[in-house]
Length: 264
Image 1: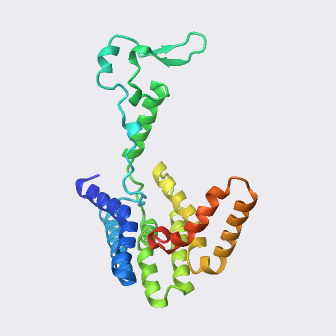
Image 2: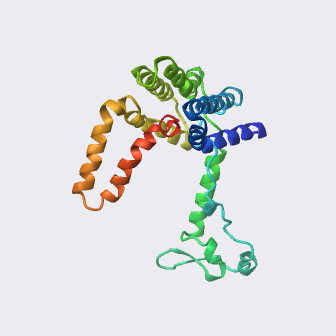
Image 3: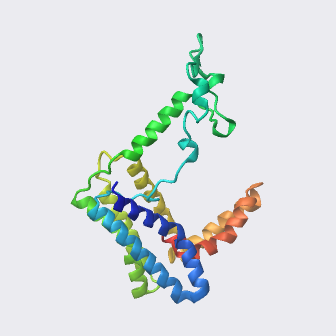
């Protein structure tokens, strides 16, 4: 990845991290008008950044999150500084004669803070596999796949536009957004030889279609009563489940009102 592309990914990650806070903070200070203004600005900025990555930098299928979070446990060195001198000239592992089991020798045992419970070979394989996944180039997109990804990227803007035209109680914004998401996934389903991250992203988008059950107006007219009834039954008749379902029942209405939780 080039430096400008990395900067675009960084800005996109920043927007995704602060969007909920920006929405809630703006609503508290400037009311509903300010809330919808910041929602439109953030979604517009995200769409521009994603389209630049797709069309200019040929970044392929857009990932979420754009930058993979750092896993500090997996980033720890196999041989921490200070251990290399102690283990030099000595075997780092011992192989059992009868079981053929690989065990780390005491001389190469790292400190407790950086210790892991797998064999050195497993750690090396895991790190090499992760490095290969991160360095895999994106799958080239044809015209059909580029259109599909563009539909996915512009879907939030088209949904906001339809909300402004038909209002929040209308079914048309809900239907338009659902059709765009399903169409995008259908067009992308023909892609072959996707790498592991791209396959995971398409699975994530497919699972997120379930969010339409929690989005208005479908949630207000059909899902809300059934979901709350199910949670109430679980809380009343299944021992111990109430500790989870009762707070969830209180949280659902607040979650449903936050745009970036629900539609972002």
